Image 1 (tube, helix red, strand yellow):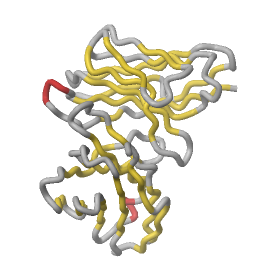
Image 2: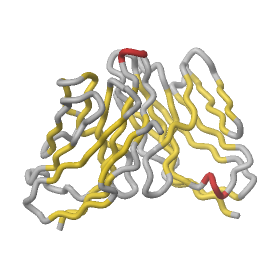
Image 3: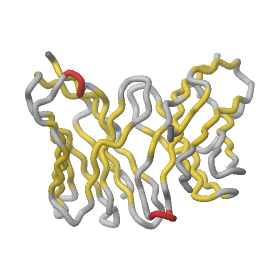
Length: 115
Length: 112
């Protein structure tokens, strides 16, 4: 069953703690993305990676960090420096440069609540 | 110039009616225009997409109309059904970086 998995679905953390959100894909896609979605809002790009061991900042990278050590995995760490971390986080992947494809496929999302 | 402007922010349509959502862009380098559908608590899913070499693309009840000279594209949902109630996002991309530039979304409610 091919797709993108994100875990956990719901995550609760105390302010000041770092937290890592998991994203795994078995679609053999080169590119992966992290978005943040606030209630009633659109998608804002946090980080993206077009190839293993390489990633770029998106529009709202401050307070976040990522790694891309394996093609299938792109974890996102929300650090204590992120001022308003409570949001719905979406991971996506696309075939990328290898297939000249723009289509992005999304995971089910992780809802992070920080109190 | 990187923005994609989407309207309306919300839309209520009677069952069986036509739902129309519009998007406009400035950057003429965009060459791929998808529409995504998102249900509450779920990730967006690709609905339909168009490239600027065609003016219309239809898939079932969903049609994209594309006006290159006006730099506008729209999603038409024919015979709208309560199951179509969702948030719809338009987006645009260019071949140079494969990132999607997203519209702000339209919350569509289909009344039975």
